[in-house]
Image 1 (cartoon, helix red, strand yellow):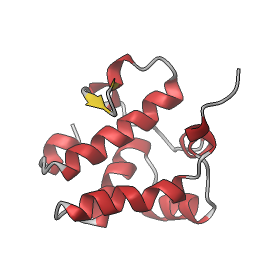
Image 2 (cartoon, one colour):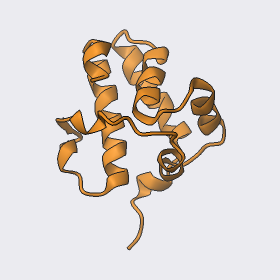
Image 3 (tube, helix red, strand yellow):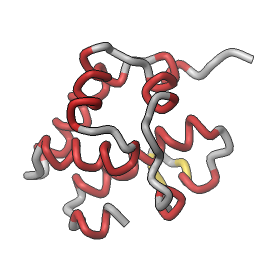
Amino acid sequence: MTKHRIFTTSVASVYPHYVQKAERKGRQKAEVDEIIRWLTGYSQVGLEKQLADEADFETFFEQAPEMNPHASLIKGVVCGVRVEEVEDPLMQKIRYLDKLVDELAKGKAMEKILR
């Protein structure tokens, strides 16, 4: 079975879109970074290294220090897909990240986003 195209896409190529989406709604890059660190367990230095190395999503999540145990509490629809029903574990992690950035852009408080 062939991998989904997003799995081999570099996080660094998508990251500016996450930041841009948040900034358009008056949020900050630092908040996007905080969400990513919360979800994956990366330090800021570790996150920046992954971006500089242009790690793809598969590698990014594979090398993540520790997925947040509360990630399973992320519920809702992103891109027409209910995140809690995504069967592929990697795709679900990507959707979790998308959902958290969406919540940030919609003005949700960080305390609520970081369950």
